[in-house]
Image (cartoon, rainbow, N blue to C red; front, side, top):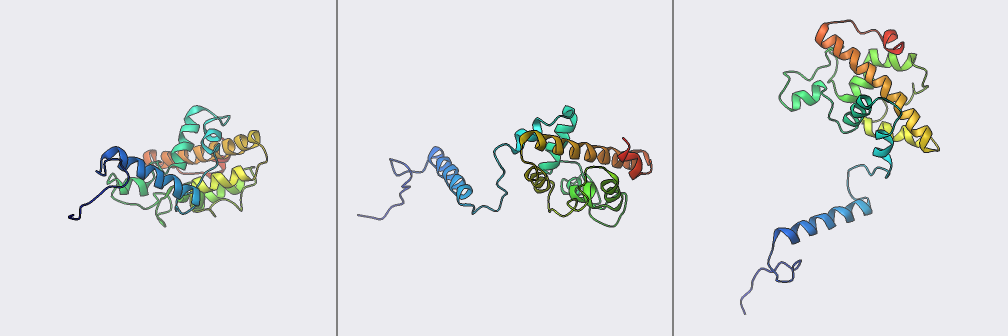
Length: 182
């Protein structure tokens, strides 16, 4: 008998999209369970906490965009070919990633230093906003506290974002003390 190709994931031995999709889903699930994936495994209630924080819906949506790296930072706009530069428009010293914009830029570090959340040492140390949010959640023992701390941090970041946009679009100087006082 002559050799032939056989797709052993279907009953007929012939590849079809349905069986290929099923194999891909099973492979993804087994990689997630084994921890072999390079992506971050989030707790089941991660997104639920974000979407149920006691803040206005626009801030919840903002924080979801921050955690998904969907905020219109210069880095993201440059990647999408919507900006000619990745540089931070305020300090011009670094690429304006979401983390730089919200945590690492000199003026935002001053905001975090002046704010009363007590997160000075944690701000800017994590590689992504999602990991930082997860570390905030892990500091709390119950869901109510998680929602409260994430909501407060999201509000601070919202006002940082608004002040940054006032600078970019209206050339209004950024003032860390004014952001904290909002």
